Amino acid sequence: MTVTDQILEELKAREPIFHRPEFGTTRADFAAMMADGFFEIGASGRRYGREDVLDALEKRHAQAHEDVWEATDFSCRELAPGLYLLTYRLLQDGVRKTRRTTIWRRDGSAWRIVFHQGTLVQD
Image (cartoon, rainbow, N blue to C red):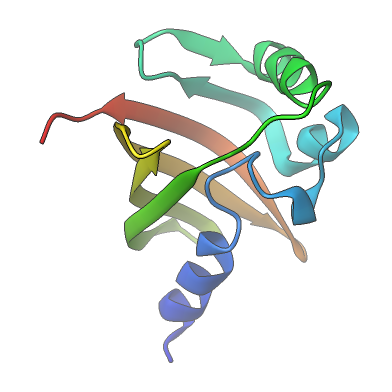
């Protein structure tokens, strides 16, 4: 197994981001996963900053909810030392299809999310 293959497996285990309870479910847990300056672009095309995302996650996890998703077609590419681009397809609730992109940075032994984007796909 190559280093990139090993990284791919580590990052696959963390996606979809913020939907893996084993990595935390609190605002503090989610904040620890994000790099300073984190932002994302939602499927709507809207830009969401770190605080926007943390507010939404806090609301989502304040009540019981079911996450039904299937992530497939993962690919990983090193952009710079310790910086990786992960792409995959996500099927949510058996209906909503998106292409996801996450840029991850390794900070020591921890992974931090630098950027995330979800784009609706038709097929």
